[in-house]
Image (cartoon, rainbow, N blue to C red):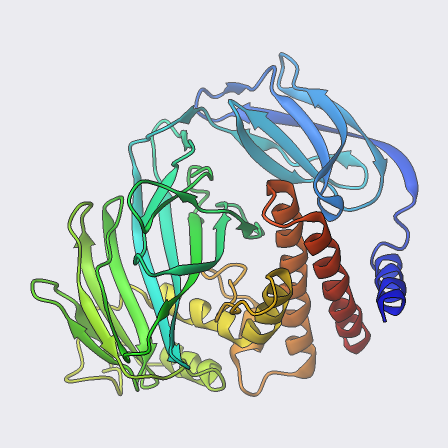
Length: 428
């Protein structure tokens, strides 16, 4: 069996990287310091290959005019990495020619203009476990623009009982993939920090942090005390209709009744140091099959019309989570693929995470529509599967680079992912 799996893995790699023969080429590009508006002279430029553990295959330095040239030894998938004041910035490396301009920013441990637009908690409860996917959408509107980065770039507070299954950071760049991270303990139990840069927003793109964790739930009830480290415009809770939500004393959660299949509660203008409170009881899972239909109905609602379903009387105020909700839930359609991959990454007997991170929850894509629609075409579903597997492979390379997985775990997981990827490609 082991030799067979090795053979399949080798075949898969051959299929994936066919044509990636050694073929030296020279790339050129420019780097601008957007904090000063000047060339980023002296910054290090590195050509890295993400599919081989972010191996550094070439180096260069930005000259006084902001230009650089670097040799590309092969046409294997590669990225340009620019290091400015310790923070890393990336651009896709073309096969030949000019690399897209890389923008870098000066770094500070704390930057004015960094805030949380939404802290969204999605809950499910099954088999004596409460599963939580928590996502933070963090803006950096600093002026002049600077990157907030330190060992404690972004701090979070989780329930003391939380068992963390997955943590990710995603940069504010179109097409950026989530990077798997290791949360660092930060003081009292349940307090953690991300060592991940919060770069200035790029258009509507902000920095995203994702944490998947589980909680003991044998009693069938749990009380949360969410805390934010930065001012947060919205703290949202999404949960199935079968789970009861009760706001704690002094916590102003408002029900948002825009979907008949799930419950949404929102607390606005949360402040650091002031904990909210809510209790959930009962069991249930998020709807998966009919999300696309629900999203379409929501999108097709007439202006001024009342949303249907939900709890109590309809509310005429806009849902502050509406631009996140369906792309958060869209990731649930890929849950079994990502959960299987993550289960392989963990020791036997560990719980798999309940949800998978959507590559870009802020911007709808054809793949996301295919994943969430009950009537999606087979081609669309395969496209979503391939996207999820590609993300998992990238995340695995990040895990290896940061030491989250051992060499043996890395080899075993990558082989398994490549087997699944090869089968998906045959069906595509």
